[in-house]
Image (cartoon, rainbow, N blue to C red; front, side):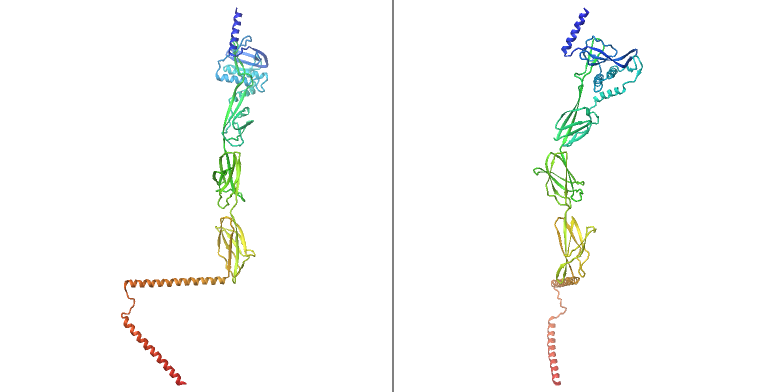
Length: 519
């Protein structure tokens, strides 16, 4: 009867398992692990043993004991169940079973013993569990490196990559390192508008499309064909069959910004960077996109540009330089485009045509030296006229003073004069030295003319003063004649004139008579 009931119970258990979609299992103890001894001690309880495998009968899958105080009964039927474990114990046991025996190069029998040892210590934290040198032997320290390796593996499971990048320049290949050094174990599951690859601990990222993008990384733990399973029977040990762990996922969100174009302006000859050059940025249809002025480093940075064809045109050149009227086209297809443009310094040829005037004839004056100074009176250079009386020089932008050093004997020198170079047009000067006498005559004539003008001006002033006085007398009705009787005065004058005239005639007559008597 008892045997019959046992069979019925077994049938019910199997039937229930099938209803749930889970197969009931049986387990057995397999081969011993030679030379690996352990002891489990809790107060008066002690369980020394030679380590051995536990396997599932259906597929010989290595499994682990979760209740070290209890024996394994091979005739029991084990059903899938949830065990009374803490969340921390549950996660750790599953990780130990996955990364322990059978993972990577953990294929030796000792790795099974190490895994079982660490699972016991997890489910029985208050029990003293240790390796011994023999059955019922002394405590020994063993498998330290292997235990540390397993601890590192289960700890790294919870460590996700740490990649410090949120912004990426268009078409720029970025190399980013994972500071947690775990990205090498991940695979790229999905990329959205971006190219990415992993090489050891470096992620290489590049995008040709501006905007927000996501890279999804995935780390699979699929060593087995099943998830971890807990089994329990009516008596005996609780069993864990190892299985796959939940995959780790990691997302990297990246904003791919538009392109930047860096324009650098410099002097054509010296390569000195130029501040103050204003440039217009135009699209392929020559529509103005933006205007910027180069800074003290000669740079102007045009940002947030979509890929395409653009043109640069100089609107205003730096002081002292020629405006570049040429459109410079370029293609934006990378995060940074670097454009280098030059300006030519404003220069002009200065020609000094030197002559002398001799007897009204003008002829070239050779071997005449000139000095050229800047506005701070620093001597820049000297030049001398040739046989044709010509001296020339090319001067850069600025204002200069020209001084004649020597001259032909007997001739004067031209006065100092200034030349302003503010464009590229030639500056031509005709300079004439004249004889010193002629110079003096000219100066004397000029002085006489000046004096004559001065006298003329003085007479005019005096005449004006007299007119002013007469006007004043007229207005005040004052007679300017000091004689009180003008009529009497007039008659006396007539008498004197007549008497004087008669006396003069008589005198002439007497002289004539005397002359005749002598003859």
